[in-house]
Each structure stands twice: as C-alpha cells, then as structure tokens.
Amino acid sequence: MMTSVSFLLLGLSLVTSADAAFRFASYYGDHMVLQQQPSSAVIWGYGELGSQVTVSLIRGLETISKITVAANGEGVWRVQLPPMEYGGPYHLVAQQFAQNISSIHLVDILFGDVWLCSGQSNMEMTVSQMFNASEELKMAADYPYIRLFVAALVQSQTELRDLARVDLPWSLPSAENLGHGDFSYFSAVCWVFGRHLARRLRYPIGLVESSWGGTPVEAWSSKTALKKCGLSGDSGELTESFQFFDTAAGPCEYSVLWNAMIHPLLNMTIKGAIWYQGEQNTAMNTDLYNCTFPALISDWRHSFNEGSHSQTDPNFPFGFVQLSTYQKSQQKDNYPVIRWHQTADYGYVPNPKMPNTFMAVAMDLGDEKSPYGSVHPRDKETVGYRLYLGACAIAYGEKDIPFQGPYPVYIDVYYEYMYMNITYDQQLVIAGSFDNIFEVLCKSSSGESYEWLPIAASFLSVSDKVITVPFVWCSALGVRYAWDDWPCDYKQCPIYSAQQQLPASLFVKYFT
Ligand SMILES: *[C@@H]1O[C@H](CO)[C@@H](O)[C@H](O)[C@H]1NC(C)=O
Ligand SMILES: *[C@@H]1O[C@H](CO)[C@@H](O)[C@H](O)[C@H]1NC(C)=O
Ligand SMILES: *[C@@H]1O[C@H](CO)[C@@H](O)[C@H](O)[C@H]1NC(C)=O
Ligand SMILES: *[C@@H]1O[C@H](CO)[C@@H](O)[C@H](O)[C@H]1NC(C)=O
Ligand SMILES: *[C@@H]1O[C@H](CO)[C@@H](O)[C@H](O)[C@H]1NC(C)=O
Image (tube, rainbow, N blue to C red):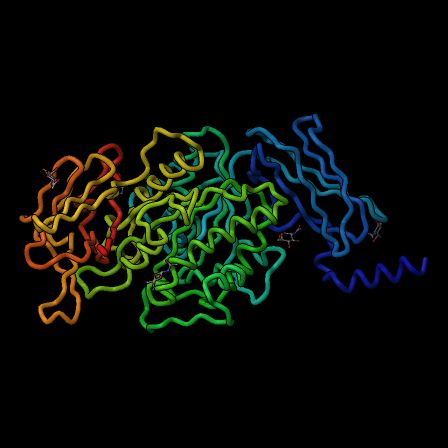
C-alpha cells in the first residue's frame, strides 16, 4: 500500500494537473481525418498514472477495433489503430479504468490522406487574400470531405510534447474557416492543393496547417538538422536589417518553431508535407540554404517516422514552392540564390540530394500590385495546382502526369564557333521575351574579375528543344538563365513545357 502511494505521488510530480485529465492530445478531435492504410493511425492522449485505457473504433453499431493500453509513468497513453481503408464516418471512444470509469469520444472521423502544410507568410496567406477569393470561399461547401486543422503560433526553447494551443480545431471547410483574416487561416496554398487532390482522389483529405510569417528555415529545424550544416549555438540573426514584410517578422531563433509547432505533431501519421518558405533566408544564412533545406527534409522524415513508430513513411513525399518574386527592376538580391539552393543546387527536383520531392516553380507569378506587398503574390491557384501535379507524380505514382518544367540536359559549348547549344529535356513553348534572360560569364577586359553579360534576344535562336546562345564578346566561362529576382511578367517567362505550361526553373552552369 505504502509503495503504491509513494509511486503515485512521485508520478504526480512529473505531471501537471492539467495533464492528468483524461483526454485526447490537442490535435485529435471531431471531424478529423486520420491517415488511411497501408499506414496505421496513431492516437494518443493523457490519463491517470497506471490506469488502463481502452480505445474503440466504431462504425454504426459495429466495433471495428478495441485496444487496451496502460497510461505510462507520465500519464500518457498511446494506441495504433489497424490500417483502415479510406472512408467513414467513425466514432472513437476512449475509456479509462481508474478508480472510476470515464469515457471520452470523438465523432465524424474519416480515413484518408493527411498532408502537413508549413512555411512562412506565403503559406500562411489565406484563401480570402488570393485572387478569385470570393469564388473560392463559395466553393468551400462543395468539399465536406476535406477537413482543416490549424496549429496556433507558438515558439518554445524546448521540444514540446503537444501543441500549446490550436487556432482551428478539426473543421469542415466554410467561408469563415477559409477566410478568417489576413495571414491567419486557412492557408490558400494548402487549401488549393488539397482541393485539387480531393477532386482527383475522391476520398477524404486532412490538411494540417502549421506556419508562421517572416520565419527562417532554422526556426523550423531541430538541433540535429542544424548541426549537419555546421549551425550550433542558440540564435539566428538577420544579416541585414531590412524588412521584407508589411506584417511583422516572426521568430528567427534556431529551432523555436520546430520545438513548438512541429515536434508535437510527430506522433501523428501523415501522408506527406508541403512547404512554402525561403524569403526570410534571403537575409539570413543564405549560402547555407543548400544544406539547411535538404537537412530539414531528411530530419522531418526521420522524425515523423520515429514519432509514429514507423507508420509515417521514412521517405514521405515533400513538396515545396520555389520562391516567387519580391522586387522588380531592383539591384540583384538573393532571391535567385535561394531558388537555386531550394533544389540543393541541381535546378530541378527530385534529385540525388532531395529524393521523393516535388517543386512548384513560381518566379513567373509576380504580383507588383498585391495589397499585401509584392512579396505576397495573390495567384495561389496556380501555385497550388503546380504542387498538386507534383504530388500526383511523386506521392501518388501517376507516371504519365508531367510535373516538371523544361530543364537543360546538355550544354555543349563550341568554342570554335563561339556559341553554345543548350538542349532541354522536352519540347519548349515560348511564352515571353528572351531579352537579357540568358547571361554568359565573361572575364572582364582587365582580366582581373568576372562579369555576367546579358544576351539580347536577337542573338539567340530557338529550335524545338535547343537554344543556341552566342558568346562572340568573350570566351564563355559559364551560363545562367533567369538569374533575377523578377525575371518576367506574369506567366510570361520565355520557356514553358508544352503539356502543362510549367515554367522552366532558373539554372547556372560553370564550365571547367
Ligand atoms: C470518482 O467519482 C466520484 C463520484 O462521482 C468522485 O467524487 C470522485 O472524485 C471520482 N474520482 C476520480 C479519481 O475521478
Ligand atoms: C552551397 O552554396 C555555397 C555558395 O552559396 C557553396 O559555397 C557551397 O559549397 C554549397 N554547399 C553545398 C552543400 O552544396
Ligand atoms: C512523440 O514522438 C516523440 C519523438 O519521437 C517522442 O519523443 C514522444 O515520446 C512521442 N509521444 C508519444 C505520446 O508517443
Ligand atoms: C479567376 O477566375 C477567372 C474566371 O473563372 C479565371 O479566368 C482566372 O484564371 C482566375 N484567376 C486565377 C488567378 O486563378
Ligand atoms: C546547335 O543546335 C542547332 C539547332 O538545333 C543545330 O542546327 C546545330 O547544328 C547545333 N550545333 C552543333 C555544333 O551541333
């Protein structure tokens, strides 16, 4: 008797009184979508130390599964449901057998695919802020099998077990939930992506938004991920003190959003993630982004797999938006550098350093007159659609869906003829001017330094898949395409794919 009492007291000291209440973790609720088979959904919550908890999954009058576990020494219980085919609705009942029997239950639960949407303000930007917002808001009611969840903006110096707060508990789409206010919820990119997926897949889609404007990749990275890129220490500082955003910058300290807004979600089984971030890193650790971003992807994959006890795929599909535009006709800034680094310096994805990824190129979607600042372009429909094409190909294995813009496979430099032939992987569609968009790297006349020489459109010739770029002015040491913050007007970059009108990404190539 004495031993069990002292165990209880000792145990209680580990748990706050709020934790002791019998309940589900913060991100389980009525109307949620749980990840379908072949994975199993993980459910966890809090209870009395040492109590037995039975979790039952019920459809109508039928109990599909019933699992009993004991709450551990911290008053946390956890079960893994059997793999379920998509569909529903189900009820989930949890019963705690302590001194008393108590019971909690969730209703209207669906199985389908769960996608996490994260990043900075362009992910946070809401449906009500995008072009055609009113039509989009009206569509909300047509998608009752998309369910939305939004984590609140919280930062922490230590890894949190659960979300400290929730902005939107699992909900059906409605005009109110999609247009709650500027940069709040629900994310336009996440919604458009999910809406296209739901229409194609015809089963439930759960969208979990955890994003915060004005934040660098380092804030979303664990200490482990940062160490891989030589970043230790505790703080991130902007190298330049200019403000990008009309909205205030979010936390920039290392790992604080990983700790509070990602770590708690690791125990949930997910299908994949999409990400729209990078603007903040044009002024912070820019040259490291080719390491920090791939490291974040690997670390999230590893951690979600571990947190879900192997239920989330250790190589889960990860989609992202390559940065759009910020300043037109300005001095060169770091936008092209981040775009390049977003591909681990390959120019395309997937690639050996970023397997199972997909990218929406967005540098042709500039929006100078955006009332939210030119860094926040309003065409989120095209962004979400391009991400969706990538998901079809990478996450859903639809081999016939083109999802990449044209990319150069060979660059043959003919020094004797003083031109190079750039051969793309696919048929090109020319939609805008080539003027000055290709640049050739030349030694300066003094021979001391190097400079990029823009090539006027009249010197180029384009045929089928090949672009011929002359360099009669100097001996070329490299070539690059669209290396500019704002390379073209809306949907008028020169090179697109024939099938889906997907823009070519920027590239740079040095000759040795
Ligand atoms: C058990 O139930 C009784 C009566 O409803 C209540 O007074 C008591 O606080 C409960 N005990 C626990 C541990 O919940
Ligand atoms: C990343 O890019 C920088 C230049 O911006 C380069 O010096 C470095 O070698 C690159 N690192 C990796 C891992 O590719
Ligand atoms: C959730 O996952 C994290 C990371 O793997 C782990 O530390 C934690 O114990 C897990 N929580 C539960 C309730 O299983
Ligand atoms: C807005 O809606 C109109 C009419 O449906 C359509 O033509 C246009 O492409 C849409 N714009 C965007 C950015 O989606
Ligand atoms: C370069 O490409 C053009 C257009 O396809 C072709 O006519 C020309 O022969 C190529 N040059 C060489 C040296 O192969």
